[in-house]
Image (cartoon, rainbow, N blue to C red; front, side, top):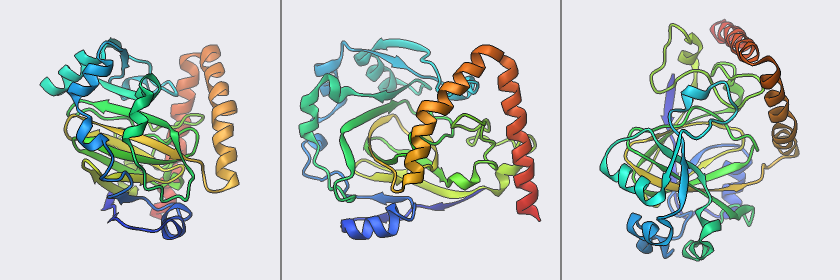
Length: 289
């Protein structure tokens, strides 16, 4: 597996960003996507979140490799938001908060963010999601079902993100009709998944104030180096084909997979694993030849 560092930039114009990164599908770290003048940088803290939403009960996700048979993993437990924040400050944990729309509960938080929208107005600022995680936790390797461009801004702690283009899906052991891989990238088993050796991607490490741009359809595997949290906002895909693929994934593919899983249960999952392995073998032979 080969990984190169993602470039870090600041002060880029919308025209240059769209031409060189967004339209070409090239990941980059933006150092000023969220303005340094945003009140969030001085106002937001765990204590502040406990004060305004501490009693909110949140769903927590654990190790996602334990639910490879599902398009999305089910929560493993629930607890009060304040208790969870105390937990991740106190000790490492696999528990994560996934796609938490705190801004819907507390709309006033939206006023604390000032974006330098390098997309020329395409960012869906009204749809922010928060992600919290303990030190050492990680997501499974996946790409986003809606095929949107994603801007992930780190507010506390440090994250590492591994990024791979969609055309490496077969080498990734992608499950058919799903949007994740059955291979563990954190501790890759090259005997079981030899095609992983031929992956070529990027590694981004983001710190508070930095935003990684993940182009439409790019695979991403996210690791919490320390406990912390980030916010993602999205922009619709740049071309009509990716927009169609996002619609198809949401409306057709996901529902078809859920139906087949209910009917055939484990047989459907085993069929998908066998198919993923066959596709990886073909892709492996192709890159080796």
